[in-house]
Image 1 (cartoon, rainbow, N blue to C red):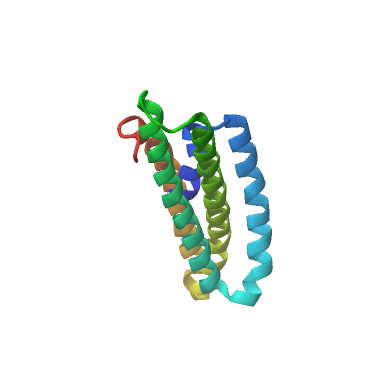
Image 2 (cartoon, rainbow, N blue to C red):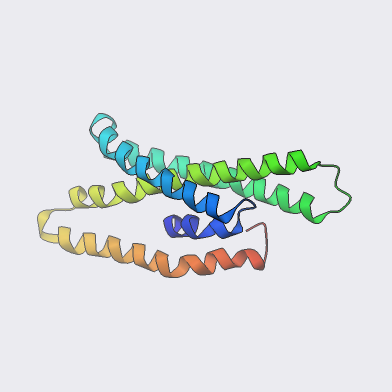
Length: 154
């Protein structure tokens, strides 16, 4: 859900849609390359945990920034200037790019780790189950992105 949710959530960022999609696409390429290179040095488990942690922390910071932006942009009497609103929009975009970087690395690692984790007899079924879970996330992700219309702090 996270990978697809982050990819589809660029619509809700307060910056240019084209810039957001471009930067998310650019962030995924080095994530795949770096995880492949760093895999042997740091190990599968450490890389998986660190990419998930990176994505989670960036997502939480981006969510907090989004909530702050929503509060101040909807309040006409806000003392926050336009420069600060632009700065927070940039921080929100940066958090989104870092989150998609981490989640793209996780998505890359999860299939490698799943193949090596299970014995040969059940490996094919386990990889199929992991792939199916990812596709269920692809089905649920648009609903998660639309939830922002219900409550903007989500």
